[in-house]
Length: 473
Ligand code: UD1
Ligand code: CA
Image (cartoon, rainbow, N blue to C red; front, side):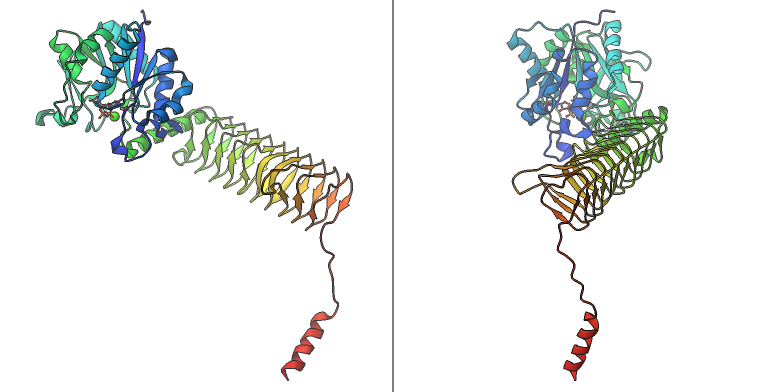
């Protein structure tokens, strides 16, 4: 079959009034990704990016900035007067640029985000096979309310008579079960020939693209419908509730994909897992865990409940105890984190290292086997192997203007409650006494004390008490 000569248009100019949001509808996220990016990703597997035209309008600059990197083309629809108007604007753009008209035009909706590449290809192929002027992707959901309905000529045949919008349904059409997905394939010339005849004489006062169906039929052109394999992939995202329904579907798919690859996920419906996340076999994910963005986790690791891991890479046999937050961190095999550790960007935790209770790291490398088990802040630090950082130790990395580096050599021992005032170097194998404030470099193997000497007054309490007794007489 000749599948060239196809261009894709994605309608993404609408405001999304039903969301009651400042953010344009197509930039709302499900599965951790903007609606429009889902649609573009699917479209790009069917035609090259430069054959995809995104029709943008509401907050167009914001939308362009958010999806520009995909390489798609943009057409501006400054006023949004309906889906038919979006096509009028596209037509005018083609005419103005003098570009050759594509023979066929696949039209997708920016707010129907779960559409799969296979389904777009199926619409294209059915369109060619049926030699249709317009091919409509449809579905039969449990509740069709709100959608335009596709009325077929006969219940068996593919031929369509018309698409009727919800508000225009006659009482006996209200139960019509087959919905218009908002995804179509057109013979471009046939579509463009009808656009000027559209009117706004309807409930919304808009130009409806859906009216083109009956207009083509009236001219004796072939308009057909094909049903999508799954209802979910053609559901629209018009309200927050609808989006969260789709979001849950995506997350559950992601969890299922990981489970099929050998990952144990307890109560997967409580976990939030983005589509790009990868996890090795025999890793266990406990309830209420979030794995976001480009996170990668190795095998035989365990992530305990309430941890949120974003754009981070974890090795094998890592234990993430409860309540950890990781953002753009790298964690080597056998490491132990938490509970309640916070690993901020550029934290690099070595093999077998521990980052324990209430420890925060940022832009910090911890060597193999090093430990910071309790209540510590490590920022802008390069820490060698087998270093012990005592409870409450802190790198003072910020002087109010600049950030400074702390370097700690292999095997050093930093006593509890020490402050290391950066820039500073603590030599390998050295000791820092607990409670020290270290402001000067410590050589290898040295002991550094940076605290006031303790004063002990023997018998002081008894003397004080007898003095108080005499006073009160
Ligand atoms: C549309 C269909 C309806 C179908 C449903 C499927 C029409 C008239 N109705 O209704 O039959 O069941 O989709 O989800 O087409 N847009 C523009 N410019 C505009 C208006 C809209 O680009 O001027 C974009 C929107 O951003 C959105 C898409 O077109 O991505 C669909 O518009 P929307 O207003 O959501 O249409 P529905 O009411 O859902
Ligand atoms: Ca919609």
